[in-house]
Length: 193
Image 1 (cartoon, rainbow, N blue to C red):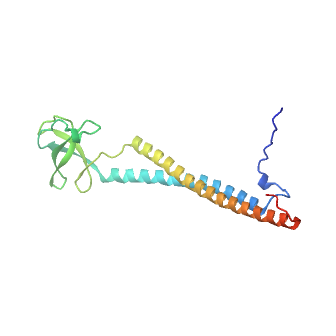
Image 2 (cartoon, rainbow, N blue to C red):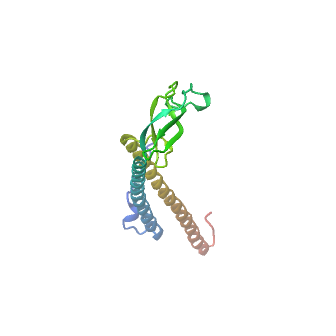
Image 3 (tube, rainbow, N blue to C red):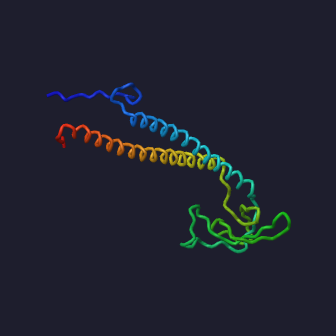
């Protein structure tokens, strides 16, 4: 026995058809609008997020500077609770600001570094030790990944909203069909279901 084949009619909501209803046309426009908004919204959200990351990294780079600091005391072996991923340990350091102010703070330094040794630390405009700013490659990586996530999130949000709208439209269409079947069945005096 041969399996029956169904031909798929593409864009049937846009073609003239006596069985096409107004709700089919509205759904076609909703689908078109949702896809258009998803693509454009995703692109613009991704570009905006990437631009925000680049501007933020540039601002951080402009507000931080590298200074040479001196270890106040010997750096110890890494304690179990304070081990970092780059194998550096926390130690107290001291440096002099350009205006002559002497600052002291904790910074990450190589383990077992001796007191009096010099290390390079990054400070912000308030003289607080901060992490090294992102390099150009790191900024690009963060911008691309942030842009992709923001774009996908925005597109997904629009597509999800479109899906909900289509579900509501489908429920209404089924209610209309049920009402029409009631009208057709009632004059004949019997029910089909």
